[in-house]
Length: 150
Image (cartoon, rainbow, N blue to C red):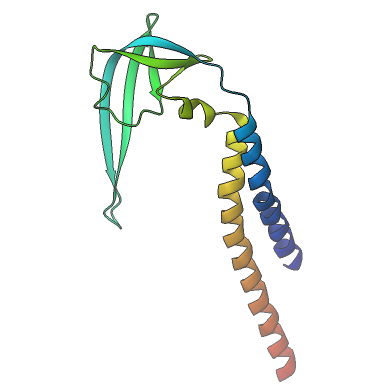
């Protein structure tokens, strides 16, 4: 159990220490390569999901656009009402995907994904490691108490 707790803490520390360098590298990465193009909105809808426990609502936007005869899912739209069906909109072509804004492109780079893995993983591992450490300490105290009673 002790080796497991130590391993969890090491993973946690590596992830937490990795947050700053990956963020700096993400910010210093060269400007994303994209081209502004005109696309036609094929469909635009909002799906609202309600959290049953808290009652909070989250909107998900599904916007499909047509460009060069192909239909694409628009990545990272902030709303659906700006995308009226049949209207021409300016979108960003990067690789073989269409994005609503530059933030959508920069957040999908490998360094951005590494940053989010370190950020989320680090805090999850902090909770897991602290919980395992607490459980290990309680087991150690219980074993010591059992030894003292004998």
